[in-house]
Length: 379
Image (cartoon, rainbow, N blue to C red; front, side):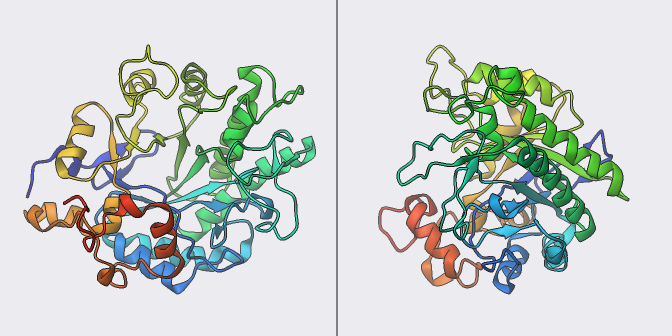
């Protein structure tokens, strides 16, 4: 068996939960659920195929209420009627001792009237996103904000009942929680907006409500993670100093890990050339003992080992896990040479990359998926 550090187990000190290694499968959009958000058989099969190697597996994002839906085929945790299918999903992910984490979110303005079946998207303020074809959202009322916070708690309760080992609050990728933190999307002048401290109010309230649900409903140790995007390119937008202030508050909350969402694990600042180091390094220095998950362009065992060597606690392999569901198992078996770094379209059925998921990958991540049938694919 290999002596890679990323194969060593990790115990979360606050909960006493031990994961069998430091490899994580991060949340990835797969658009495989039914239109109402219920888990499909194809989805269960996909998760079962790709589970079993990593220490933790985080689902694609699930909405906490109907207005939180961001795309078709999205998983939902907004009603008790979904508990049976979520239970099946957690069971599929628990293969060979992998811990199953349900990611929960609201899309906010990153949705459309069509996806919401005639309802206008909502956000912190009535400010359009800068992406093409975005719609002007409706500003949430204070009553709706308070209800949305409670909805995160109820989604957590359902995750506990369904047998998951934890939830990850999705505070990244320009979705609703980030929209409240961002000076671009949050122009409010009440207690939910204004200064950077006030723009933290909603994210921190969600963390508190999720932990309250864990305290009330969990009959076993249950993880609470938080995913964050360190910067925005919008002006005004989130800058790295803002994020460090939010992290200062998050690390004083009972979260068990921080998950930094970036396309490259060693990416530097998008806005500040004076920041000369990859952002994950000062973030890790800032949070101290709080575990950090790094993600983005981690493909080879050497890539993952470099993440651990540089002080991060977990390495998340996203697209590579699609190409090679037995990545960890092959390393343990001393069979690294057989790890696949490309995908043959002929193998997509065997890999569970079917239907809308395959179409989504080909339209949004064609080059990153690395098709073996194309001569310029990287080996």
